[in-house]
Image (cartoon, rainbow, N blue to C red; front, side):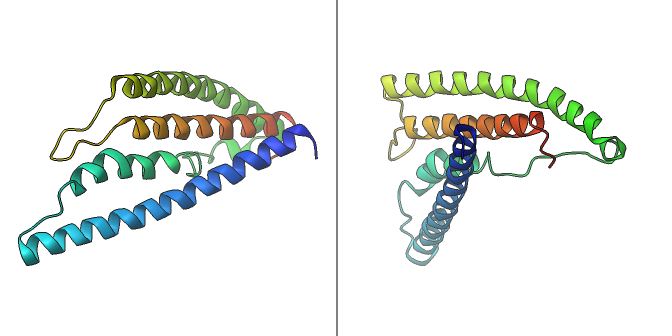
Length: 162
């Protein structure tokens, strides 16, 4: 297997691993919220910090860790009638600006994560949580989405059809 095959396999395996991690995080969120609700209504003693960690850390992780694995919207009722060469050209012409856009988002999200880390940015609330891990997860999600789009572009250039 060549270098490109290894890169493609690594990217897909990483995206799958991030999706599993997001599933575990989602389960943790569910348990935390259920425990908070139980404590709040049964004993009038909510668990402090559940809201902050859920909205500032865990929810961001669930969304951005699954960003690259999500099936993206495609409207094919027109393009499916075209010859394969025309479909490939349309796909290439749509993937290039998308990749450029997400490269910019990668760069800006990395700058934001570094700024958050250097500043020691924390959330508001009863228990201040550091926000830089969430900012780095945003960068990670955009990076792997960009890699997936690059894989799709190179596959299209090599003549591989979806």
